[in-house]
Image (cartoon, rainbow, N blue to C red):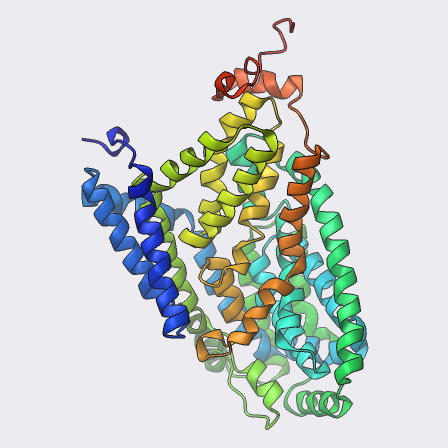
Length: 503
């Protein structure tokens, strides 16, 4: 019996693996005070497998679902590996130390948070990868923030706000292309429709970071002795020169030319390795070591040592293992029909456009929370809700915006999600070592959570919530898209082709 013939689980059965997994996660995170969600998610995968067996699935069917989702997300794992190499090599080359040095000498402490957000937004827009931005420019900004005496979580919040916002409106981004693909709209129309939420949320976040910068410096004062100690230590241990920014400029230039992200980032690894050997006097074997195991230095300045002793492929293995387990859990939930049952139950309660928009955003957020996968949080609601939008006569651009914001932007705010795990690892927040206060970056990543909130305000007021054009309706019929019959919910006859005279 094929998996496509299996009946969907009942709602209580579908909720069982989700609720039990959240309980086990809660015990691990809050009772044991241990931020290692790997085993709870693996237990969740096992529970979902048992549910699948009860529904009549063979293990082979469930396994295919697990590995299908993992396979789809392998490019992200490749980015993690490449970013790990680039962090270690760019520190050795002097690229990251140079960014920190000039940031401390040029930037004003008061405007630092706002500048950090804008810089990360521009770089992420150019690269098309929030993860690559966080792991390179974001790491350097963490060092600058430490020099200014700004709390780690404030800097991390600004970095995440900028990096993930640049990612969601970049035509080079995988998620920016995935959201319109699963909802049947073109990518540039999708990006244009993101602007009504993107621009206000970025402006509000910019204002908050400017205010916070002045407030933090006024209350604590920038320690210029600390800044001097850091810059002097950097000069003693590295050659500092604007020329050392060339590896970063190369990566951005390749991205602007629309080269794929992984080859562009790996070109940065090669350029960084060559720079390390030619300028910093590092040996070839040392470059290999830094790319694999990370950079190691003892300057005697704790702020420098804590920031520069990192990178390498192995530093990403904690994150990669978490990503793979989370993806497997999400794949099992999808394959067994648990997620589909939950979404259908939500759809049965929705009778308005504002309701369906809220459900789409909420489902993307919940999928991020439960399945730990930003791709699944975009793809699954996109597939499930699109017929409902068509039946209501609303453009699926509304849906693509909802799932992009509930998926891409909320991903870094869930610590056990692929995005959140990467942020915590790449920015050295030390959460797994007990520094739970650094999770405050989550509410301080203002731009990430303000955008879906503004989008929901639009849904309830009718602003920036386009109805389907006749051309779009015609396209639905020409391509054979499913259009839900919502007459039982009080909606008029589903959309008809423009060639048919409307009453």
